[in-house]
Length: 242
Ligand SMILES: [Zn+2]
Image (cartoon, rainbow, N blue to C red):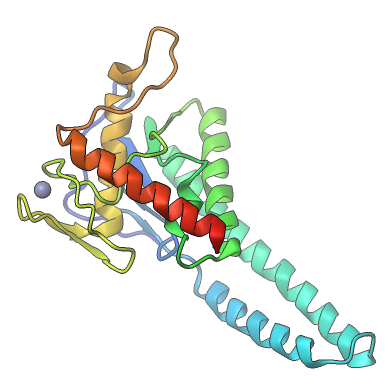
């Protein structure tokens, strides 16, 4: 399910397709800088709740009993169904994104999941996020669309997409980004997606002589950027301890 918004960018490359930033997440499966929202299927949440209930029941059964085996089988089937629904949603979204882009900016594959889930600590969500990005990557490779991964410490959620100021106080529960410097207000994930587009746009300038990517250019504010990296480091530490 996608929605088009009036602020869709007109930025295109010579091939006529836009450069697109993609913020993959928990609340939405993905949000693009073009204003497309890819939602997780409703059935997914429904089945996940059902799975939790079955797992609770399962833990109370006597191991090896007839009912224990019955539930075990039910849980395995439900796991499979959830995986299929999720995979299908991932396929539909990644195909649509890759077909509509000339170049794609994403978060670093290594830390995307960890940073977003340090408090939620949902292993499932982590795995789902990285599979989504991996899928986006291999489809882009297949269709000759360049993928630009942001630096692992690039604060895509905390940076204002309008003026570049970094708000290090933004917490996971803040769904709307509000910039205290320029007053820009936008959906948190859309703001992040636009920042990732900026990373992809500036990629040619941030390639070194060997063609390796280097840290994307920050718009001033080196000190706050450093503070942000430290904050993420702390979050990773918390994540590894939990
Ligand atoms: Zn701003």
